[in-house]
Length: 423
Length: 216
Image (cartoon, rainbow over all chains, first blue to last red; front, side, top):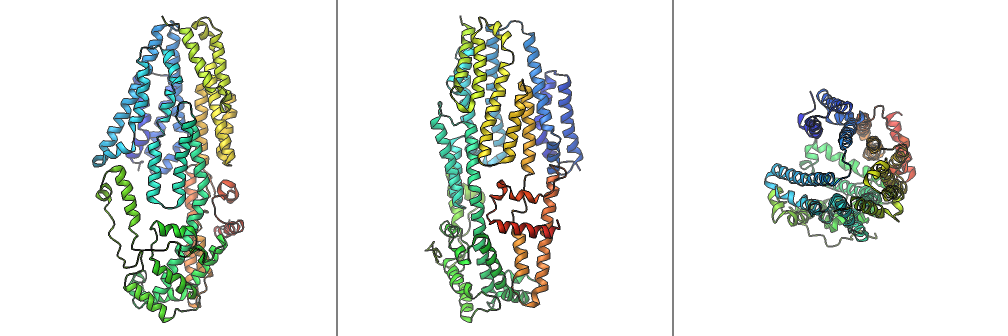
């Protein structure tokens, strides 16, 4: 079965148009034939292969995109050279006027294409078409191009046009309009609304600061795109190890909590009737396995984290990732239940040991009174919804995705985010 | 009446001045200056046309060279050797070229090559320690003897999943680079090693355990 035409149309559509453009111009010769052959090979592979990833890989391995682009540019440049060779007039006013008109026409076409493509995107987006206005600031690009067109239409010659383009930095404005300050601010706001960890926010803020610094120091007040690109790459590179370590340590305390919860809850009278044990083939046997084996698992997990980070279970709980999750309401559990697990259950969760009846009584009570879970666990969604509405319109988040119900928890809200710090 | 020669001289002068004194763009400035010097020595535009040669193309080559030097400095600084090597190759190859068409082809080819090199420069799934951790838990946890056989089965299941993970990545990478095999030596290369948040002895042990399971 061939690769889906939806995929091949998206991948090859531009190349088909480019080839047709060459046919329309009656271009021919070796480069045209090679161009034709490269596209034919792309089409053939699409018809023969059925795996999209393998198809993409083969196109890259055979260098078909490169071959096509290579012969396309050679074909157009030899056509231009031919036209130039036929031009016996040299540098006269008519030729220069024509060059200027051709250039301006290309810019006019570009503005038209940008608007057409945006209109197409909006049509596809249907009810959410206004999002395109928020996400794609075409006006900034169009304004930059129109400034160039206005300059060209101001009655100056082609070399004067080119000179002023350089002097006024309008060519840089075209380049710079791709990087928008609003886009960077959007990324900061999205990172803050998510607040998954401190590094994502820091990264986005540093990118904006880099952009502003480059803008301030440039002659035409436009950030250099190469310096900005490499600067952003360095920022991502710098923070990536911190993000990975943060996530791994977070996994350390998260899994510890889940094991402690599994162990103490397995001793509750209702355990065989709730998840995960109720789903087992033999719920009672599964409950016994949790009672007998979780302490051994917890202690191996403790050794693993000790080896990784030199951190005990207590130290994992004291890590800033724990405080962060409390502060930004990502914590799944309530403060009172975590205090119970940490101070009372963890010390006795040892191989061959059982919790005393008092601990089992507390666990049953907290479960029955519905006090195990964070009553504010819906706040991250609310926070994100507020950010979303700021950009896309009041009530838009709820309209599209719905809002989470108020959490079914009778626990008190977290009052001490640094509960385990320094223990 | 416009004096085209003078306005073109002014144009090339402005272009040259844009790079003057910019230490990142010394080659571009030199190439722009060479072109300006040519036009500045001409009495007519026809003379300029006949004298220009490939000076315009040399500017494109110089600009690519300077930009790749900037990239090279950046990748050297962060020790991204594959990307740095691609910059070095482009700079070297650009020296042999004298027209922009060949330059575009060469840069495109190099871009294609480095994209494949980056895509296949992976230590996945070694960087996901989940299977090894689960295996250790099932094999090492102190549990009553009655569970030993069951826990061994859990561990075997994780080992199978780990093997599948390596076989999946090799299948995927072979679509991009035929003959690709997971390379354990790559783990110690800085661009990969810096992303693993564990001490060296832990990495060494993870590597030994993985190789033992994969029988490599």
